[in-house]
Image (spheres, rainbow, N blue to C red):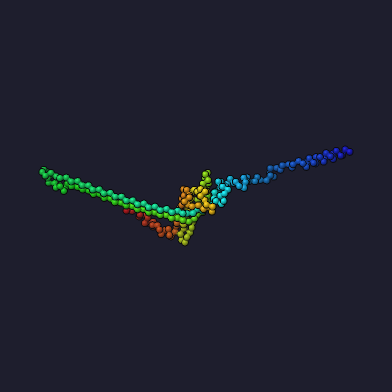
Length: 214
């Protein structure tokens, strides 16, 4: 009869132990913390890219294609001219020591004429495409872009470099933007090789052109 209460107490303790949660694992056994995920719609790393922008560039490292449509033309013409005439004459006395002078000995005259004219005409036309990358996102959402293209054609090398600031609203749906929409734009188009050297003066001729006074 004495064993029955002991058996009941042991069963009750077993039930209590089964209901208790397991002891916490030591810190070394806990899994590593997962990276914070703010959600599927908003991503802080995307900057100011709206949900409806699609594949348009808007973050650092994105690629946007520039359509080069540069066309400038300027003409300057100026002309100037001056003309000046002056003369002076004295009539010597008929008596005295100065009577030996003739009127033509005391006559003087001067003439000055200048005519100048200058004309300057310059025209540029640049077309093509170049893809650049976004290097910085400004606080107002504007994008700073920069990129270059190297081309080796036959026996010459061509370099096109573009940099500036663009607005995301000017980027088309297919991720293109006109070069005329770039602020603070710097466009460099240079070439090296036999064709480029043929269009320049030789080093000795350039030297004499610099020291020539004419």
